[in-house]
Figure 1 (cartoon, helix red, strand yellow):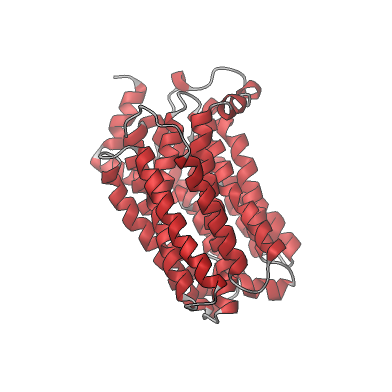
Figure 2 (cartoon, rainbow, N blue to C red):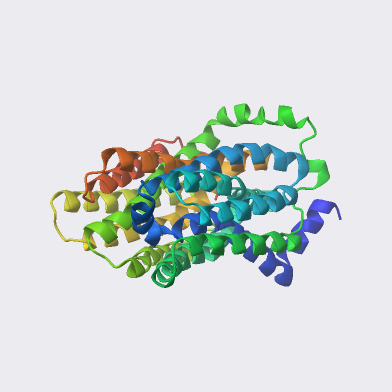
Length: 403
């Protein structure tokens, strides 16, 4: 039995498999946890630090997007575990820097630093799944990871809201530093999924040229861009909702987490269903239907918000439907995109992650530029980019690939 087959068998065994998937799920959750846990504290941070708290999200996403493009080729060259170890150290140090910050400028800097390490988690978790599985099986496993990682955006805002009530926002980042330290030691229990014979043999410098080949791979780029546009819409809600819910509708910060968490319950539910759907339907068909449903739900929200009808419920219900679709869209888009790449899964995962999470930069900049004190800015940004996500898939030529 060769090394790769041995890894696959070990990762699929009941005991090791549960531990393996739990750790990967936690690594996938790093992005959500790093952003969502302090969402209830953003209005307080903006007042205390006398600056735009949305920039802390922008800074994190800038670092997250850029760093992945560096870590991707490195992981294809040296394997997945070494970058993960380094990433957790950087994340912990960045979290400590955030906790000790006394100005918006300081915390934005440390958020960028924090992201340099945080990005290794979801990027390399996806790459490890691609190392072991292909297409529908990968979509099945990624849906399982989404169910596990969905705990973070449920617990994060709820925990952050309670911590703000009992302490200060600084304590939230001290907690993130402790989580980063814990994850560092958990990586010792992960197998190395990229066997030496499958690693990039060229020099590390030349490995970065893989990106040119990936951007010429139109099927890969199509799936990736659709996912990117969807996440521009998602981050518009993630970044804009604290101010819409707390400042505009007067929701108590400690209760904001419940309104955020209900969306993640929808994601978990659809992710669970998707584990079966990917074996019965083509990924293209699943993606077309779910992006269309998301677009229609947000269209209803746009009309209602513009007409000032229904209050907070015309946001809560359509957004729940929108986020629920992510239980299928995220896993299926990623699996379909990675299936178009035969080698260098680390670099391909880096491109997906860089564009997917870097998309939040667009969201935060649009929110800051067009902020009008009402939910309308957040609403039209979500609507525009959800429609673009669906449009890319609905104008795609049919392929002969099965689910």
